[in-house]
Image 1 (tube, rainbow, N blue to C red):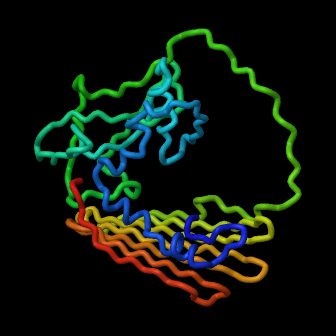
Image 2 (cartoon, rainbow, N blue to C red):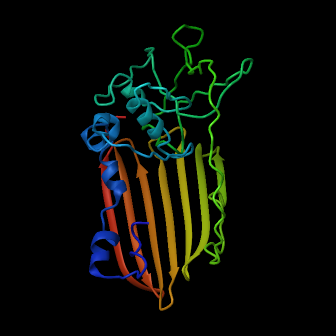
Length: 308
């Protein structure tokens, strides 16, 4: 966590306060860049694969937020192009023709939308059926649009289809793996307690208020070289079916570090609300030393909603 003091000494000097504790929240930077453009593309390999000149060892995960980055690199860098993107659900309709120059959807019009699917390692044998689910919302993963709307999916026409890559029949060599290395014996207990991410997860529908909310909590304790770290986190999301502009998110995170000579505790609160025109963001950081407040920093900003 970038807000914590640097290990292993956890010094609370002016360099820490300037470059970590009081650093400008990354969310505020990103929230002001709501359109695709130079901000996102200038340091992205996706738009400049020709710059990759040396061998690279790429590591990714099928449940990562950027799960497609590794297969996309392979697809564009390898000369035979043997990797394809394969499963699931996201396109802003206003960006149907151009991510750089979005245009509004016209009520009553029919549009052809082409959506790239996520990469996956699943395979389907002959005779199996594939179910395709299409939604016009992805709460709480995606912030709702400022206005309610009804969309319709046109079925039974040639343009409505899902294309999956087909593995060509061929004799393929079975990979020859080396035997596993001897298991390393670790005498130090590094994890005193470990709780899964979904320590607490609750979904609620309030029919009288037409609101939907999701609450998530997690808790974990780790021990590393005699230092005990405790982390508690809570995220809360809420939206309104009739007034989706009135959506909100609140988050709380607390990290406590027990050292030999002191106890440090970093608390962060994060609140985002919206209406039809703006996002209202409030971020507060607290740093405690031995239960005494040592430093506090707060940001309050109003960010206009851009084209969406």
